[in-house]
Image 1 (spheres, rainbow, N blue to C red):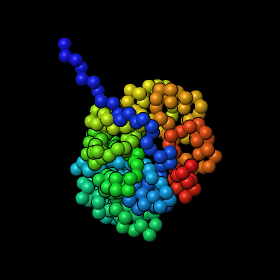
Image 2: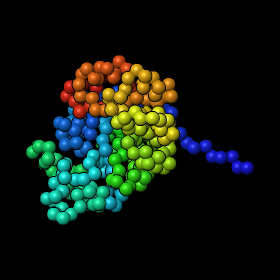
Image 3: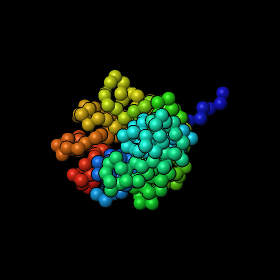
Image 4: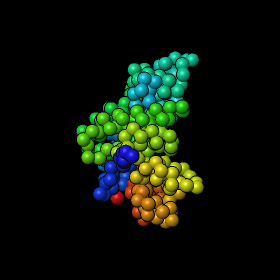
Amino acid sequence: MPVPTPIPRPIAFDHWPYPRWLAHRGAGKLAPENTLAAFRAGAAHGYRMFECDVKLSADGVPFLLHDATLQRTTNALEHLGAGTSAVAGDHPWRALSQLDAGSWHSRAFAGEPLPSLENIARYCLHNGYFLNLEIKPTPGLERQTGEVVAQHVARLWHGAAVPPLLTSFDHEALAAARDAQPQLPRGLLLDTLGPGWLETALTLDCVAIVCNQALWDRSSVTQAKSAGVRCLSYTVNDEWAAQRLIDLGLEGIITDRVDLFSPLL
């Protein structure tokens, strides 16, 4: 009988290579979230790692956006016209790239565009920044999104010492990313610790779990770390909460308050 080919595992880091502090959606309170302007704002406060959300355009281009729809953070209704679908994934990248993703935040950012993953990759690679990419599929495109994002990350970060950490709440998207590029590091996002939470992360071959900050305590951290899984938390905006997580030994803290927390802590 033929010997089964072993499945490649995620990159085995001798030490956790990512900074502890991550700027949420760039610096998504000081500048329009998930834009290059937000990344620059976070970098200006000394942050070297950024969390952001990525989904696919109708023609398969990965780009940054949190919501499934366009109304909250772009001028889509005005630009695309009444009666046009508000779902971001229904539009080709050519149309999406023309939207204003900054005016909703403040006048200073009027005209700020939605960035493609390729734009963000260039910025991070050129400056030596790290990235946590949350795979945020348009409903119905979970597997396709995980696969395409992983393929693009493998291409864009080819030869880089530390690729992005790919995370998602969606198990199907993470499984597709694993199947497409198993060597890329992955993390399971959780907003509850239901039965089998750790087993699910291990089944998906995740190197990290990223939890709502309230879910981590001494017991859950010990369970995760005993299984060789790193512990990260979102979205931490209070000093007391941050100190509690630091005392628990968390490897990553995602925050909106880049103006409050020094990334050197």
